[in-house]
Length: 126
Image (cartoon, rainbow, N blue to C red):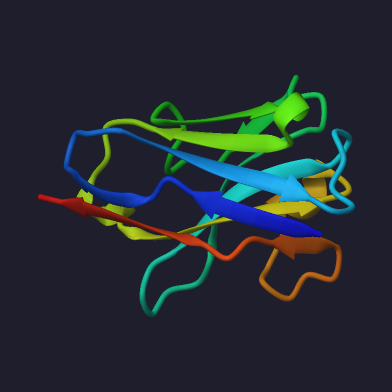
């Protein structure tokens, strides 16, 4: 399984970014996928997840209403639209894939059933 995240960068507070994650290998349209972030010196936090069909999503309270996850199975790509960005959103953002959404929600970097992308840096300036 390979996950390639992109779309990070530097943005001013209040701005928007859209991250993309292209999946290849054993990731299928049935795989659940999700997004996480990790700030320096902190743990990797779950942001949101989406089931294989894209029909159901689940978000952490910290980003609910500001971040939106979607996927295009024809392109093997999952997106994270981030709006109203704040300086505290600054982190490395990771995408992940698993057999089911539950494993995404509870994932840690060492979870045996979760595959991780390499991360993309998002910096929000005040």
